[in-house]
Image 1: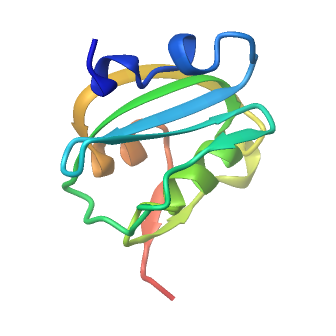
Image 2 (image 1 turned 180 degrees about the vertical axis):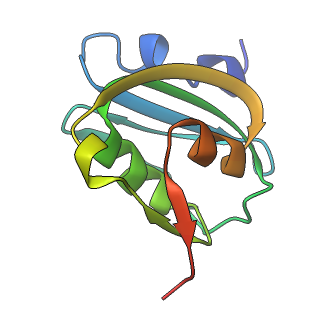
Length: 112
């Protein structure tokens, strides 16, 4: 298995109910947050919305996913207040950061 194959919730955080993992294809590394535990690389940098990623989310609140993604997005992310506590689960491979942001219902605003 490669790090890309291993960068998913059932491998990194099998014992946690809430998990978010993102694999960055451009640099070949994985970042995860497992419940209260964060397994983050020191290479976190803002990326353009067309960056290719894999993402795995298991039982995380939309607000937590938005906060996690905002670490990497060059754009400012906004969340619909009524959906902030909505729990989501998804696994998408080789997609863009922008597609994930749109898929989960976040909005992109101006930096600032």
